[in-house]
Image (cartoon, rainbow, N blue to C red; front, side):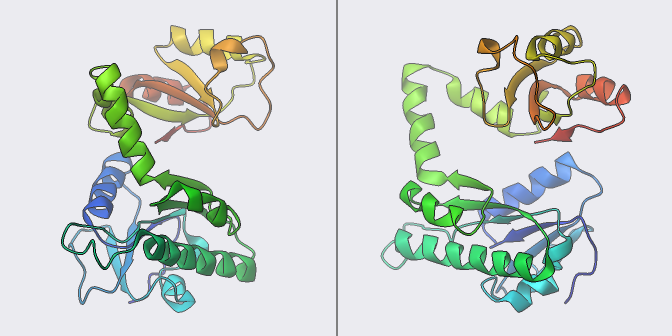
Amino acid sequence: MKYTGKNHIILIGWSDKSKSALQEVFKSDETIDIVIIDNLEKAPMMEERLFYVRGDATDEEALLRANLPKAKGVIIFADQITQDNYATKDPLLVDGKTLLVATAITAIEEKTNTSIHVTAEVINQKHIRLFERVKVDEFIPTQEMISHAAVRSLFSHGVTHMYSELMSTKYEETMYEIPKQDEWRTYRDAFIDLLNKGATLVADRGDLNINQKLDERIPDDAQLFVICDKETISQINSNTHIRSRNL
């Protein structure tokens, strides 16, 4: 089939990981559509806002049938490496396929003069530099994140619970992207104002050192992130013309 909607999310590759991502999207946004691209004979699930495009995501035609130029974003999941297929699923080849998909997306962006946010799962962190050349915006270095969380759990018991809370919408507190307000001149202004409202300012883009630069001016293109519960973010949203984004 051909999807003709817009502002949707495209998930490339069906697996337990993409199924979890699908459920997380549905929890975060009750109106957004999801399009899955895979080579399965039929749609892996039946949901009201779920659409399926059968095809090879390294082929531009399949991506266009998913209406890539009008998409809100794309997540490329790496092929699963399990105990059963470990001998045939070389991590190098898995990342190679993901890179081909990313290259096809970039080609369409250039042809249609569009820019789509792309997140890719990378098996080997050393390959990230290759993905940066094809304009992948964010990476999920699977092995590195799992190893890091496992080691941290030994030195700081319970740290994995904190990771889970920040990364899932099923918990009361999670992370949200929030727009800069005109009355905030410095990070201190934003930090104190948000704290009084029940939210904690933790980062500007990838910069987590907010507490060390409180008296610096917030740039106009700042991308601020806070941790709070749904009720708090709803109250903050009601006082601004720009809605915050749940992560």
